[in-house]
Length: 152
Image (cartoon, rainbow, N blue to C red; front, side, top):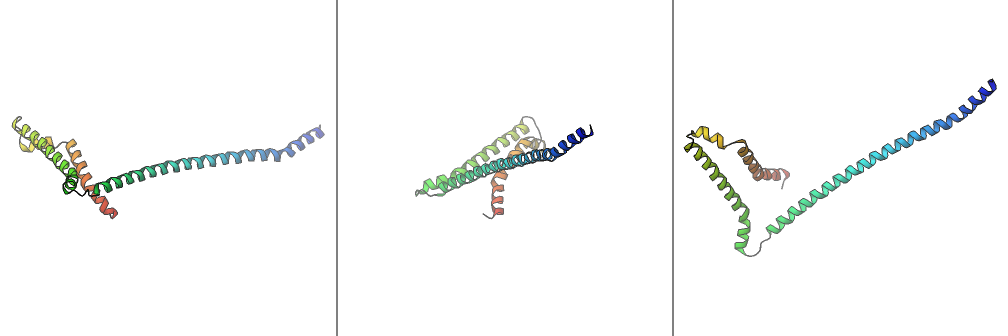
């Protein structure tokens, strides 16, 4: 019986290094797969970031092309003047329209409802109007400040 037990123990102990090697190989493969997964995820993130960079570069190139097209004189003075005045004229027109609507609302509140100026004015200068005013001012003057800060 002792001989049989000794043989069995010898067989198991001789197979132990091979079993340990198999277990170590399994762990190594699992570790390598985890590394590959992380590398693939990093590549995916890198590709996503690169696609975003390409999209931004395309937007910048498009803006430059539009400004380049707009800055080229046509040779006809009145056409160049008209082209240069379109954005300012539209801006002034909308500003005048906005002012007229707000003044009409102020007048209606004061005349029809008999409110005092100090009470009617805050009613027409509501949060939506404040947000609109802030957006317009930020668009016109924020872009210039950023361009100046970037050194352009």
